[in-house]
Amino acid sequence: MGAKRLGRRVWAIGSGLPFPINVFLVELGGGLTLVDAGIRPMAGAILRAIGRLGLPLQRVVLTHGHFDHIGGLPAVLRRWPVPVLAHPEEVPFLLGERRYPAMLRWPTKRPSTLRRPARPAKPLVDPRWLRALDPAEEPAGLQPRHCPGHTPGHTAYWAPDEGLLLAGDLFSAYLPGRLGRPTPSLTTDMAQAVRSGALVTELRPERMALCHGGVVHRPHDLYPAYRRRHLRE
Image (cartoon, rainbow, N blue to C red; front, side):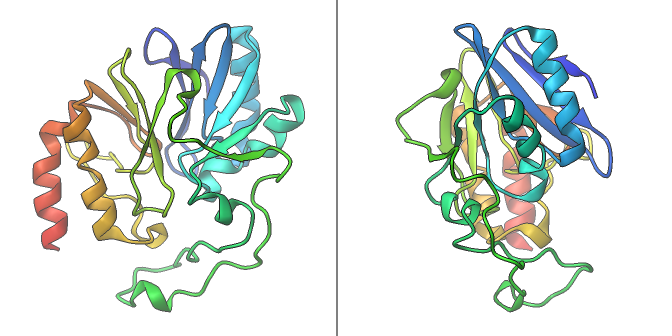
């Protein structure tokens, strides 16, 4: 799990186990911002990448609070006690005041309203460091773009100077040249998530980096077919 340069000031740190997961480091003004923290075993790779870059970590920004996006946070925060920013609608989940739907073990056609909530309800992020993201702020030059559906507060981060969208779980991309849906068993409202994908037609990024599946070039060219396919379903 090494850091791979994605642009002039953006690096990806990836893990292939138990499934592809990517997190990102973004440099600006002599400091680093971590976008998501992956699963717990990724913490060492994240800290080593920060050390190799030789710059201090200034903050963590989250696309959302699922386990595969916050698992490395405790170890990272022990070394770098910095603010953790998330969309205001995501904060109650991160504080344990609301619960995400439990991940289903097997595919099911049951309505999402019948899913058992995850237990126990407890803070997912240390409340000492958690802060609601102001939509007007641009940490490390990243513009937060609220794109709900996968979770209520799911947020992508747009780096216009890089032409790069750090899109979290807005899509998956396991097959080359094809956009996939976010994980169905963890998605609060799939129809809303599919519609939120229209963000790529607004921004028209040259590249989109996802948590699951890597980098997609010109995702706005792929989105119309994706929308027709999945909203029809």
